Length: 245
Image 1: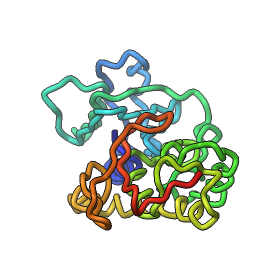
Image 2 (image 1 turned 135 degrees about the vertical axis):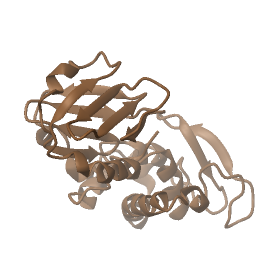
Image 3 (image 1 turned 180 degrees about the vertical axis):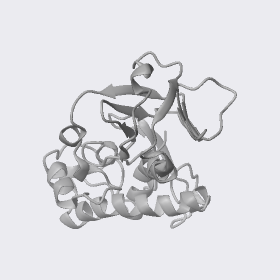
């Protein structure tokens, strides 16, 4: 599943389409009437966490890439696109294996931009307040809560907890204040580190915990399990990552 930094890259790569009028819209999506997009200019392309938002004067279309979604700019794949947009200059934007939905309300009222770890509007104090309101939540679930850390996915979760030496089974309410601040700070910091490594095509080389077998600090095997309400894979070292609560 693409995480926030990957969507940030998509936004950067698609700035060429802002201001252009859509002359063709089609695909195998049944969720929206694609003909309504034809003739509309793209006003803006925005991201909120794992959501890619195509804003037009008469409608907003949300793309969610789910587990296996992909996109192609000015090229196609050997599979039919879920949504394909064409422009007068011959440029094309294609989306595959994703969820397509129309948003029928003001997106600025709908989305909490302060929760997006990649946004200039990110508010760490607000994230800490939300965490303190959920003391029984596990740390592994907290980082994947999109209302608190929009854009954080499983890779970032595992790497952040390893960086701050916190066991994923820790409860949020048991974290010392310094660890709570570190969790919030590193969720954003690692997201931008992720962005830089992704652009340099070196992301996996920097994984210290996610999908790894041996702890690079203690040189003992990592524990691996699906944890929390999210039931996502966690990797942790029982020696250097302390369990709180």
